[in-house]
Each structure stands twice: as C-alpha cells, then as structure tokens.
Image (cartoon, rainbow, N blue to C red; front, side):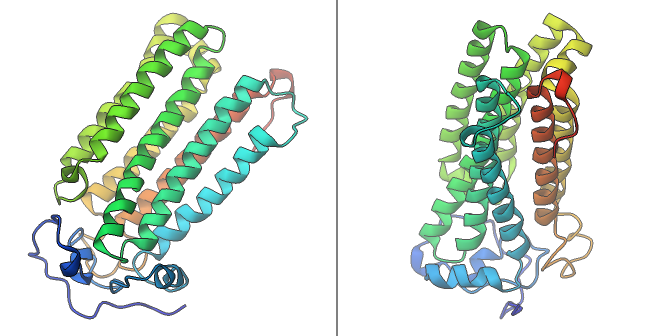
Length: 295
C-alpha cells in the first residue's frame, strides 16, 4: 500500500469547520476536525475515481473505510440469509423480519459511513452530502435496534409493539430532520450531535422500561435478550466516548494518525456491539429446544 502524507503541518489553532465556498475547500479544511491527527491526509481530489483508488492506499481514513465497508457487506449477507434465503430453522416470519431490519439498518449505516470516509476529500459539496448521509445512517441504525428490541419484548402484544414502533419512528424522523441542519454537521461543536443522538437513544429504552414494568427483569431478559442489548449500549458508549474525547491521539499526537485513533476505536466498538446484539436476537428467534450458539 502507498502511504499518504500531509504536505503541510496541521495548524492546531485552526477555527471550527464552518460552511466554506467550494473553491476554498482544501486539504486544510479536512484537518480542522481533529487537531491531534497530524498526517496522513489526502489532498482534495475532485474525482470519484481517485477517491475510490485511495481506498487501496494507507492514510488516516483507511481503517475507517474498511472497518465499516467490510461490516456492511457482512450484515448485508446476513440480511439475505435472514429474509431472502430459505431457512431450515423454522423461524417465525415476524422474527425473521425483525432481525432482517436490524441487519439492513446496520448494513446501510456502515455503507453510508464507509462512503463518507471514502469521498470526504472529493469536494465541499460531496463532503456535506456524504456527511449528512453518515449521520442519517446512525439514526437508521438506532431505529433498527429499537424496532427489533420492541418486537421481541411485545411479540404477543401487537398493540403495545405498534405504539412503541410509532413513537420510535416519529423520533427517528425528527432526529433525521435535525441532522439536515448545517449547524449539526459543519461546526466543531459536537454538542448538538450528542444531544440529538442521546435523546433518541434514551427513547430506545421506552420498550425496555415498559417490559420491565410488565414482566419483571428475568422475563424481560428472556424475551428480548437484555444482556446483549445492554452490551450493545455499553460498547457503543465506550466507542463514542473515545471519539468525542479524541483518545488516545490527544496523548499521542501524530502517533495514531494511520491507525489507533479514537475514530478507529469507535468503529471497532460499534462493530463488536452490533455483532453481539445480532447474536442475541438470533438466539431469541430460535425455538428453545433448538437453541445453540449461533455466530
């Protein structure tokens, strides 16, 4: 692999990223999001083909691109296995649909993420569009997580499931609209993003709390795989914390440029979390008499 290096040193006192004219979008603009990543930046290409070619080179987006590109392909494969391919495990159609929606939401989220990291150096307009889709993908993943969880909690109580699905869908639409605002995407202040995702994330616990009140802790765990759900939340929270705090690169500036930066760790923790949750969902769908470890 060819190693990409920056041509000029990053300026640590660069102001937060604001909307800029297309003509002034440059490699320097791409450096403004993280002052601790000092090298490995790609030049602005204005070419989709060059952006795609750069996925085979080593730069500070390589790990971000491939971690989610491969993750997207894997979950897309699982979606076809769950919803399209004939299955001999006698899963209920509704269970297959719920797991399939989780698979597809993960696959799309990871696809949008990989696309953003691939084309972020194309131009300002492409950067904005791909970044917008990246954030919408996160909302979609959260919605798929909530849908699948509510399905298994209220599998036999369709009215309760419909109410929770409606509320989650409305929250997803509002969160998605919030991500369309320029202030959400193009400022150095990450608080608006954290606030939107936190509010939507808290809403995902509504079916959990309802189920806890209705059935008790033990039965709730049996119904929805509570441990895998909480594992997903924990791993995502760890990853998000590393990303927001820019760790470990804030302590090792320039040493984590190509791999090991907080954004890379976030991708890894998210991958581990959704894999854990999917395995938990599959275990719930398999009849008790036939349950075994399914990877």
